Image (cartoon, rainbow, N blue to C red; front, side):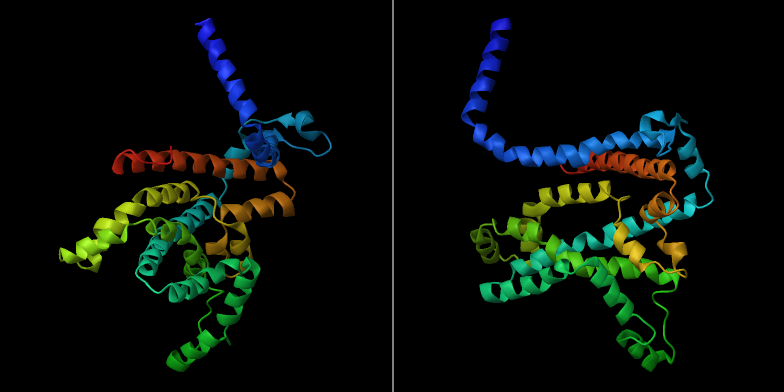
Length: 309
């Protein structure tokens, strides 16, 4: 047993010696991940303390689950949680199929020049800043904007898109789809590029139409990728983007636009209640981990054992 362990250790050291350059290349990414992802986890301890910047993390009084109980008993808890879940859930349901559909459509374009121009058009919105996107939304959806000009021509009065809570969620989701669906389709386009064209030719000769070829050739090819992307998206269902939601917020649409991320920013940075905001953020992260594990378990059961891990 001892000799076997020594032999394994010797092989490991020999492998490191031969491939040391690869580990040198990997080192910067590992160091950055350690510094910016793992070291900050130590600060999560303030969620269980009555944190004071003067006393520091270790010197602050331990209060246990006090801040979590405060958040769960808060009158805003139900509204904030439901806003976050609705925005994330509906965003996942409506945005997840769009990149797949785009990739399947792009895969049917045979002329390379036309395909590249279409891809350029689809990918371009991804490189527009979120601030610019929200600015465009306020301009186009303002009472005097081009969309409301059309609405006034039909109904005689404008719609307050950016002020009414019932419009906020759909504006957020649809603009997200417009901005990110093209870029998200890249991974599916790359997978479909590996499909042997002879399979489609053979299926066509056997009388299969376009939809049958997509269902029996293309979709099985990208199914493992679809499973992984869905698991990651569902696991981050509570981690909806802060920037866009905060920028789109107005005093009128707040009942629908206040989510956990914006709430943490307000109570943490604006109000200075760091311990309470850390507790809310930690609660959010724990829910995300539980969702990730649960969805991965379900997908593996439905996808013949193929999942994230």
